[in-house]
Length: 112
Image (cartoon, rainbow, N blue to C red; front, top):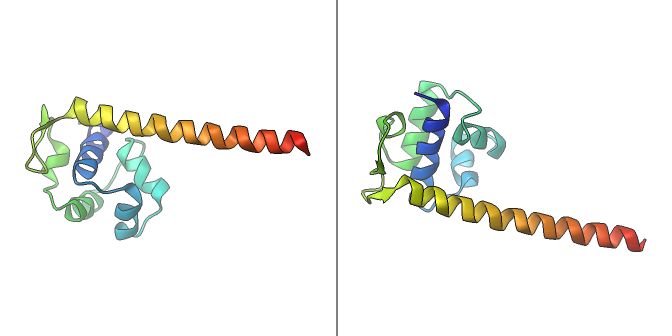
């Protein structure tokens, strides 16, 4: 199974439970960056780490390793594409905020 799919399954499960990356990273005792790399499929998590994440999310490790058409981890049938769409919308909103903040900083620097 691809690391990307495992990471996506973890992310979909986390989001379906209304949790953020920071809370899971804190519970695992790792940085948000390290946790984010797991969800993005950039880091190959150990079986122990997968178990720890599954415990934080109150699911089985097998939920991360399967190739489901639907996310059943939260006992809700939520199409993966729907959850991915929600995640993308949140990411776009976040990036818009980042751009706005950078534009404000640039404006302030130009005035000085």
